[in-house]
Image (cartoon, rainbow, N blue to C red; front, side, top):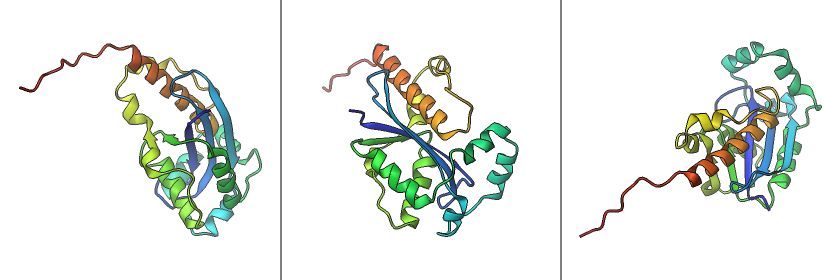
Length: 187
């Protein structure tokens, strides 16, 4: 069973309470090379506005500068109401323990704010949140650079898949590297 889930959001803001445009996620195991089930859903912007989530002007402008392919991906598949997507994500998450994201202050924090805005319980425990950036700082960048993306950037599912594979590579690399810290006995 895959106890880890990598999540990647595409949003219209950078703060908790921002509109979520899409959620991509994949189940994985840090000890293997296999990925599990995938989750991808686009979210109806109006359903986010209706519960008070907001658009950040700077992020909206940033999206206008992205390739058309990235913007088009936010509308295919057809966006669904936020409540439906969060319910489906909670169902997808069942059986997993850890939730990962690329950074500790973005994806999971914004996702948590959306669950709270809808008065829904999030499916993960705070203590089980994991951050790729901290892990990636421990390994050689050349190891991470070898992991290709399965599709264009700024697509929640493709970004989540690449990040999960990078975590797997980082774990493999860390297990291969000999420990260089000398043991010091207390005296």
